[in-house]
Length: 357
Ligand code: UD1
Image (cartoon, rainbow, N blue to C red; front, side, top):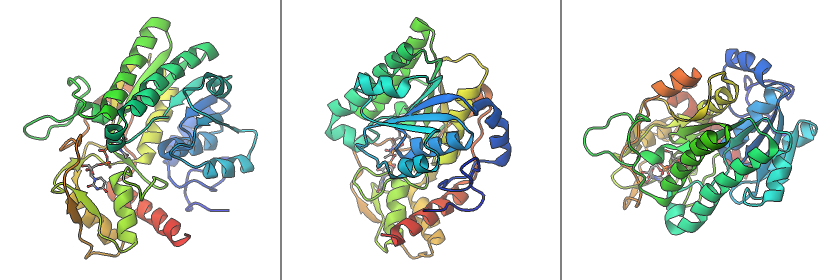
């Protein structure tokens, strides 16, 4: 069985299987608030969902996962279930299937809704599928949550809602008018409005977390839809040239996955009234892709690696940078770790995984 690095978040599962570290103080503070609670994670076999499941189990929650495995494997969940079958349930099914959803939601007090078709270019090729899963799916989850008597839904939204703002790069604030550029961005934004409306209409507590380019171990690489850090890590470690779409001067607020996990846990446990608020989850710093290639190549021991350039992608915003004051004040959120630390951790995971293939 695979072992995580020493120092990974510890719980009844010890250090096994956890690839991302949450601060010990954070874990100690949240464990009493989460231990023993029943929660459901939609999309829990996926990249961010899987790390959230790890943390929830370490904090001694009772977790059910629904995932259709359309963009994920059950391998990690199966390993976790072997460790403690009584803490984790897995329903293989779509959030568009009410009977699967009912099964997954039964008894849940909190739902973390991460299931989605999560790629800008994929949404441009298949807009109706993105819309069906990301919007009809969102409403299905909210309705299922109502049926199951769930108190709170924590929704994974996207900073792509902001689109592009001409002129100098300024951090995105939640009060800014959204301007989605792709079907994906529009679909994730519509989900936020559903969260707000279901809260106002039915009293269910909801919050939308607008993630800014989350990355880390276990993110999928090697497909045309893979996120940039995973793609660069794979290429650099395999001795290939990372592909940059456009001039490489576009920038993103690259957010270690531990921060996204922490934001979900804080949302589940806050005593603030949640009624559809939207908060940015990022770091407040941005990095352009050329700098990113250099940072990663240096850390991977391939300082000479140079990218190859392809035309810019349709639907790509030029820059993306979070103002995280809203999340700080509502949730007490703060980013975990630095970009450099998280890149090192991510590269180490990809190195081990690629070597094992
Ligand atoms: C990403 C997420 C999206 C999330 C959003 C939040 C993925 C696949 N997409 O979108 O779910 O809601 O952040 O802000 O995780 N690029 C390259 N080379 C590559 C891959 C990408 O140059 O091999 C470029 C892209 O053209 C883009 C930038 O890197 O300019 C970021 O692309 P990507 O990682 O796909 O993320 P977003 O589209 O920003």
